[in-house]
Image (cartoon, rainbow, N blue to C red):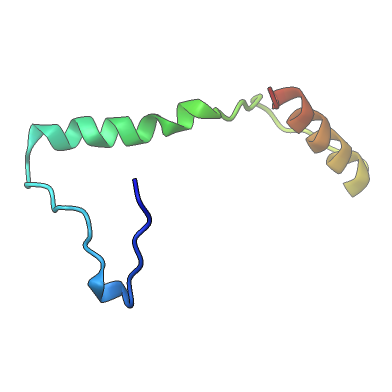
Length: 69
């Protein structure tokens, strides 16, 4: 796919509009919503109390490290 230059936004063509109530629209929407599966957010239910902001930051950093593949 080549690179194209435009002098203004008006010169760019947008995507074709979808037909209203087309069943294909639902498939497209479901496909777009599945992008969350690439990096799901794993949360443990409950409330945690921390003695300081530093302790909270360390816990957040630890969780991020553990969740990063």
